[in-house]
Length: 178
Image (cartoon, rainbow, N blue to C red):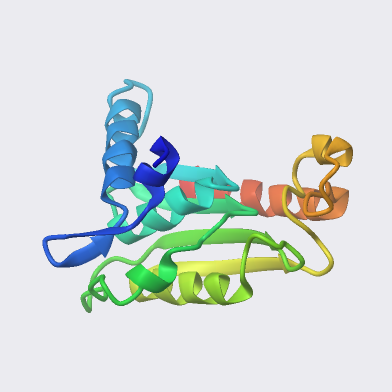
């Protein structure tokens, strides 16, 4: 088994299914970031591309203090089926001033629309406000101009989707973190 599989594969621990090794990596990154003097640990955002969708989803399920905004660009959310019923719902009265932006190509062969819907529902049940930008006729890797040179038809740069995604990201980050 590869190290990627070891980190991304959900497994059972203490009666719950999760990506526990990925959570260890995320916690180490948050600890490092929050240890930097100029970082406001109460206003943290995370952005993920492609397989970074796993990290965004997992971070949303973790509900770490100070993490206010999550953004995924053509993120892969497989594994949500195993995890979706394993996490507690948000307690009534908890602060839910948290936003997730999911930027997805509707023609992405690596991302099932059902996974997007389940991820949205799961994150919302944990108190996140979720906005999905699902671009028609757009494939995987749409934010990367180098995809124009990728021989696989699964990957295509889309200038318009990339711009709209980035503009929405900047607007959200300014609103939540400034």
